[in-house]
Length: 278
Image 1 (spheres, rainbow, N blue to C red):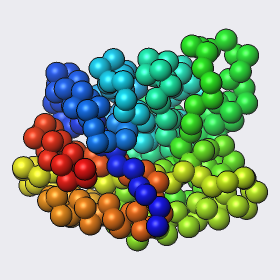
Image 2 (cartoon, rainbow, N blue to C red; image 1 turned 135 degrees about the vertical axis):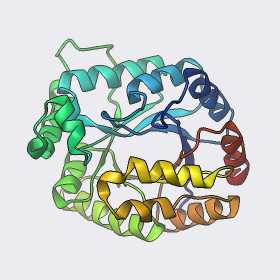
Image 3 (spheres, helix red, strand yellow; image 1 turned 30 degrees about the horizontal axis):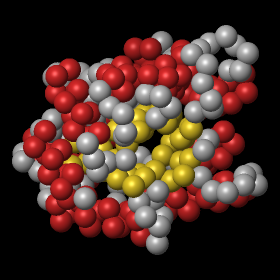
């Protein structure tokens, strides 16, 4: 059984989050024991743009890695996505991992003026740009190649990950769901005869002090999924024991890095999570 690193999400998608809380959250996360600060992405929502949130975090941290897990790639042009990623990597002195996927919310695509039906093809074009056409484009700051995670559960998404990515970003759920997806990701990697293995990332949600509020947030954030939002909310981790069991489950399924996202912007919850995973 491999050792799983545990990261924590920034509360950047929680409605009404202040810059003061977000920056203090990053400072405390940097003090340990977390491996990475992750962010989610949503356009039509009361949330902070993910690359902006990570730029703020980069300014007040020096140890913890930063990651979009994931950013919705097709909402941005290939050049703009590259500019965002290179900028965060430069501001963090090389501590950035770019996680991208297509997302699933039609309202985000409508607001961005991007065709929802072409989202997979657009992401493939973006990844090809990042991997082959960025060099010599003049878009900077100039950086070494950035680690790229690719999310998604379809066969096309897994092939995209294996062709262009360094790792796979799973969208959350119980450990067994991650294990099933990870098996498919590894198979796609081998099918393209890539050397080594992809990094396997997972995610979950937590709230200790006010779990009902956390569940209400998840029901709202995932309302577009219909009744499935209730299953997501039911998976909210509300005790140290639940967190430790969740981490052990992901570790047993071969997860390399697990990001736990807050559903309530409570600094006390951050400190309690740090104690639970230490």
